[in-house]
Length: 115
Image 1 (cartoon, rainbow, N blue to C red):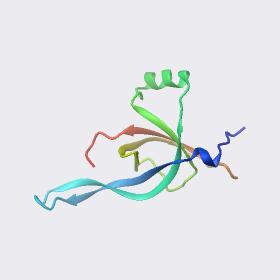
Image 2: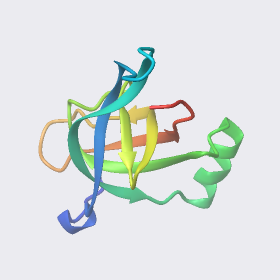
Image 3: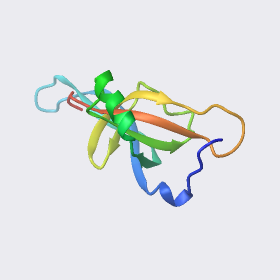
Image 4: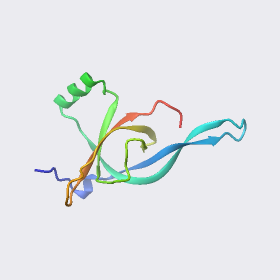
C-alpha cells in the first residue's frame, strides 16, 4: 500500500537548479554560480533508527532525505537549495507508477563546492 501524505505536509519550498560558469567582473576568471531553474514544495523525511544505522554503514551520515510530489524535471545531476543551504542530489527514488499520489524520495548531500 502506498504512503499517503496530506497537502499541508508540503509546506517548505526548495529551489531546484544547476551551476553554470559565469565570468568574474573583476578578474575575468570563470567561476561557478548557482542558478535556480524552478521551485518545488517538499516535506522533510525523518529516518527511523534502523535507517539511520544503515546510512552510517553506507557512509551517508551527512545526508538528508526529503519527499516531493512526483516531478519528471528533477534528476540526479541537479542541485537543490533548502533554507539557503546548497545541496547536491545524491540519490533519487522516483515513483513512476500509474495514478495519483506519487511521491519522489530525494537524498541530498551538502554541497562542498563553491556555487
